[in-house]
Amino acid sequence: MTHSRSQRIVMDGNGSYLGMSKGCFVLKDRNGNEEKYPLFENEIKEVVLRSGNSVSTGALSSLGFWGVDVLVMTQRARAYRNRIHFFYRINGTMQKLENVF
Image (cartoon, rainbow, N blue to C red; front, side, top):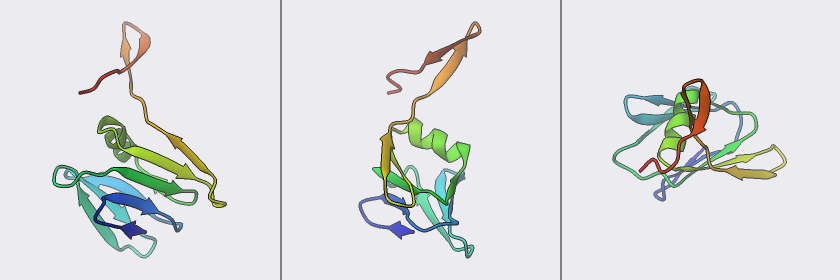
């Protein structure tokens, strides 16, 4: 687990959890230690998730909504980089949400 001034959240061990609480990303390690990243005070540029960790759907939704890059890696450090897309339902059909801002 790494926290730097460039506001990059890295979950590089295993057993960590990234969730949301009161407008903050909350990163908990397997020992129960917590780090908070206020969403409105700091700009988070990237989140790196390595296999063996977990992320709440609320945190994933916030990352996608705010356009934060998410890098998903396997234990062997193979990377999969994707932007999270949002979909909504109109009259029974799923539509991709474009141009949030």
